[in-house]
Image (cartoon, rainbow, N blue to C red; front, side, top):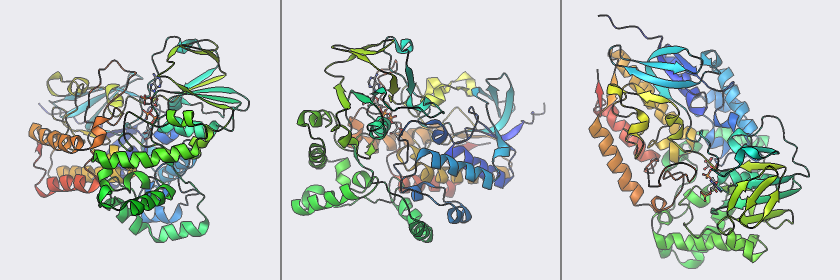
Length: 537
Ligand code: NA7
């Protein structure tokens, strides 16, 4: 029997930051490939998250793709931390420059993908009823692309405008004079609240657990500064490669409590005044694993919150008590704490007065009926595995990915999983992309996989599967590192917490926290050993 020839050698699902770069590499390699994108345009996260205040927490100049010197030379970022619209424009510019749009099929949602062992290919089912076949299937479906709404009674009954931040209206919303509720105080809620405080009539924030927020220090980039950045791109990207999280900030390896207090405090003041994630990833490294160091730094940040919020009772409500600094995702903010000094901004502690239901006019807590014109749900995502669960992947012997990853996912470096040959999970659970300045890790992963694909094609190989031993070793390695860090003790989307799903919480080991350099070592070792962690056929 002759095996069928698939429609494509490679299908990429998703046309965001990851999918665009993967498509570019495939086109360069001459691979017969296409991108299937559910939306009507490219851009992924940056197309989708149209909520007020959406912008980078990564330095713009560290976020852009690094693969093309020409692209770096011609693109000018206007702000240290670009807003959503600018990033979307940038991705369009990339797509035009590298002629990527002709490879993308928009409005094509993938519902299911089933492995056909006989023909060594994936059968991909689309929502419009079509079916396509491909030798290799690459997922670039986003880590935070499955939003979750609270399960309050009456969510559909509200008569005003309400939306999850991920589904914020594409048309501008007139907030002036409006009574607005924001539910949720994660990185998204913090951006929304900071942006809207002085633009609405009244803003009421419904907070369950506060986060440790720190100043972003955004500013315009002048043409002269941009020229200077362009001249130093090599060192910017070298710094990103050297750092654990792919940022320009490098950890300080002194032990917190061994640094004399005045020096320590001066260092922390300097970090607090530094733009971006310096106060998280540029800190003493032991703040991430030593409870004493972490408590000391948390105390310093709590002091900042108390200085910035005038009402001491409100300040206390904004200081986390259930987790230390940096053990959950640190929201970066612009005058967030000062928003609570305004007369039109109110903070409701949901631990004291929980929401009972959403009503046609607003919402009801255990002690009050509120009326609103707009309710914004900044309630987060079914993170990292949520987008995978929405597609029915079926691998060898009828095994489904949903079943396999229901508890703790098992993967080889986060990019492949045993039982699902030729499925490449580019921004998958347990890959370095999740805990990183995304494009930095994604370029590494896409490059590594594209070289692997070229190797297979050169040898006439048509099947690759992660070995069970490789993923067992990866999980053990990942657990070892994660368990040594304080973030493993905090309930957050990093560890798989989402109170809006029917799932009992336990750490699902979703992110690789070993850092970019170590991650690349693992991938590099595979290359050196002829990809010994994978079964090739
Ligand atoms: P996050 O960080 O998961 O934050 C979600 C927020 O919504 C958080 O404050 C939650 O409180 C709150 N939440 C969730 N469900 C509810 C219900 N039912 N009632 C009240 N409050 C609720 O998501 P973000 O969108 O802010 O950030 C995600 C990432 O996007 C971010 O890290 C960036 O990388 C980009 P909780 O803390 O669970 O008590």
